[in-house]
Amino acid sequence: MKDLTLMMIAAGGLLVGGFVHADHDMLHATLYKNPQCGCCEAHANHLREHGFTVDTEPTHEMPVLKQEHGVTREMAGCHTTVVDGYVVEGHVHAGLIHRLLEERPDVTGISLPGMPTGSPGMPGPKPEPLEVYTFDGEETALFGTQ
Image (cartoon, rainbow, N blue to C red; front, side, top):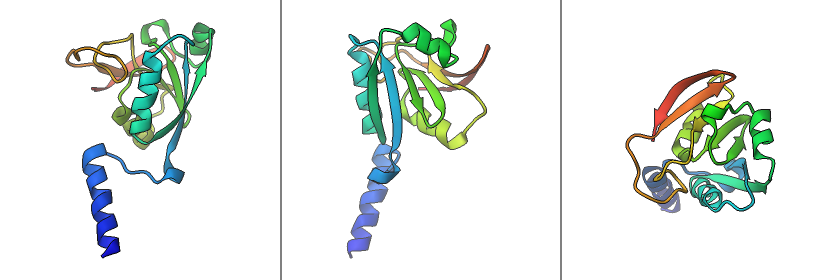
């Protein structure tokens, strides 16, 4: 009976949250942000709610950090997150980050450029659709919408 109960809890978690992780399976992300930014903390919390452990690293050197991670001006978002070898730029929904990590495309990372309202961590109504791009050097391609 205990095994059946655990199986039902796990299945419920998959239906509600999309992913179930044991603590040892949680993905680690480092989110680099401007020290005064509050939306970055809100986005970090969104990632935590979706199976990531997140360290936030405040820095006044965001432009340099973005350049070092291959983020072009066109792909720049509010903050830069590094997770499992990929760069995630801006307020990308955790579901698309999980998709990136499952598919493992040969790119530097993904980006939701700018700071669109309604994206995870940004208050306000969500415009439809929010487009997320892959990037690698100067090349970009649509990865998905959120």
